[in-house]
Length: 294
Length: 214
Image (cartoon, rainbow over all chains, first blue to last red; front, top):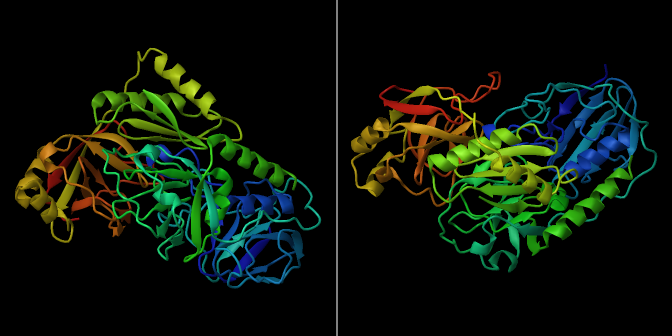
């Protein structure tokens, strides 16, 4: 079995797959890759199943030495590894893939043919950083086993990543309490706060007046924008709580979840309303793009 | 019952706007009836609502709404919940419950009276949610209701016993949270190796006992 050794871990590097589903009724959210589109694309490029586990790096990447020959892909943002991105790349035994600080968005993914063979907890290898379910971020000296479960040959050539710079526009649909709110959310730009993490993106900007309605705690979906009494919106992210008591004017659309994963502290975002039909259509287009990689 | 989209991959089913045993039972019944269906990724039961996450590549809002109507129109005969009684030892106030004095001030009671009334109540686990294995408890005496914090705390210690509005709960793991912390227990509420992982489950009865040091 091939393995990779963690020479330096980077700022926060974790094993991620597409998440841990079927446990929300026990308060366990899905977790999974913050930019699932990049992880899925990376897996398809090296010939894996799309939900194979890979490494998720955040803001500053790590250095990883491979024991044997491997086929890898680096997707998501450019972390300065000096290798072609968004394509299958051969790495020789003893070679090191060295990533550094990001030159673009918040996250990069290292996928490897055969997949990362990490132990699964409750059906998934995804590390839920806030609770420790599924393990912890990688440390210097950790040895990560690589599996042998590839499905196809690696894809040749480079693919064009989905368009978009860090920050910018996030498209949303109406959420459960949309009618409690006015247009404040759409009036200006919000900045991503330093306190943001995989659980939620805390935004700073024009305060949204508290609607003050009677609100019972209810289930919250990925990408929900909740407004606590201080009026500063929080976008619930992959490690989000499964229920919440703050009202929600809007929800980020599925096709823009990957953009959330690429947001860095201090990036600016704006929100734009789309219809449910448009949201579904945009997701279909994105899936079509992804499956061209198979 | 109302059904509406919450996002492009979820539906929110609501059985009312209040905490009641009747809506609790409907929530539990719907949750059980939808478990394990292909294309349904997660179920989030709450006091009076169930949020249903589905895979938008396989299902759409109409289809999932159809399943909900079909299941709730079927007769409820034979639906019964497992019900256990769990005693939770708690150390109240001071460093264990930094918001006890605020709750006392808000309710106009003394801290001792808050503790006494809290321990005299019989709570029902309405659902498990928020964070890993967090039990939402119905049955808080109305006079103890205290609003949540204006902005959530970044760090609430494991085992914290808390009041949020008219609700009560216990934090199974250290996490952020916006409820008022009145005490702490040493009981483990989440065990990943246990089947199922939560100590307190939907439908259980919980009773708090004062005095034990965490």
